[in-house]
Image (cartoon, rainbow, N blue to C red; front, side, top):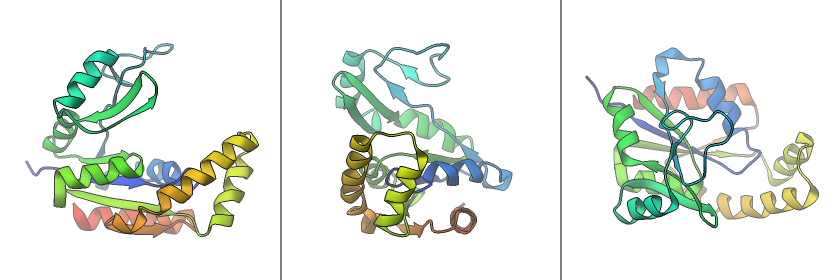
Length: 188
């Protein structure tokens, strides 16, 4: 069985990355699979271990991070870590599926460093900073302080775009989806 590729999509909040991934899932020929992330937080509601996340203690998470078990991880809040286990990447790709990863820019670059040519890193760009701000405000879900933080973080994230294999400008969702689909097909 042919080993699957790793497809990483990274982007600032508001660029449409999640919308692109959701649309890509409608293409069975892409043979996309997901890894289950690990977290040190407790399950919420009906979340199940091994389904939504692998729920592990903060101590075990830190131990596994030090042991090199993660391809990428981050302590998002004090005591609350999220990350992708190398074993999950292996599980999906060895089953012949292309692993699609929706992760932050630093995590995306770590995946490329670990997996080299097996990984295709794609950075989704907004058409402009003004359009990004318009999209964030148009959601109507965030307070002004949150929007400002997202825009400041976007400046930082955009500085990493040149380090990604490919950059796709999402000025038209249909076109961006087709461009990413074509990239995945060409790299499968």
